[in-house]
Length: 314
Image: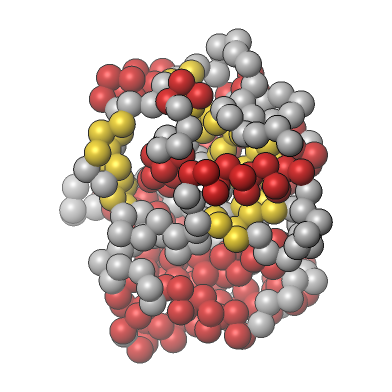
């Protein structure tokens, strides 16, 4: 069986830089490329990125460069940047390329598939990490693990793409899981982001607040209960036990850690509230379900974004 030997990544933020640094421990740097252009590409080439205090200069490839397609292309951009990222990756995707999307939410794979087809895609996500990005520096205490696979995976009968990626992760030493039901796992992470990440963003606190503050934890639970209700209508088997499991994962994170959504607010960037509460509201309307907590969060976080120009903390 052919191995994954070359890796391209687009989106060298906290997640992208952390995972690519791990991959570079086992994959030669000549077989790695970061797809970037303009000022960002020049900055990466000149300064590199810092991961837990170690400066790394990854090879940079422009979107326009004609090059041999990579065996694996990883998308780690923000959701709003995905359409452009799909265009920028075109010269690096070939018939045998496997594509991973580690974006938050439950929509990115279907968006990518519109251009590159489902036959190249594996579902994936990052679980249990506490990555924090400041300018070009990424720090973390827990990198977590990557669940991945086809929509359905049967042990002993994994697809060739799943086996190829498993082989790479074993060589690299990345922690991973191949769930039987990847759609359910995607929704579980979506539920956690919609609850924990949005509540922390609104309150501007660390994971410790959800771990220790009773009222904060209760508010996160109420948010996630609405996701469970929507998931049931969408034919996804989420349960209240999944909320308990999700909080157990949150309890393992650094109390001072914070999700990317809060980091966006602190940097006065657009958040991903549209793919969290926005998606819940959209699906709830389809099924005539009330989701008052997510509606409240959506309005408040959108108001925070609109208030950026008037902030007294600049």
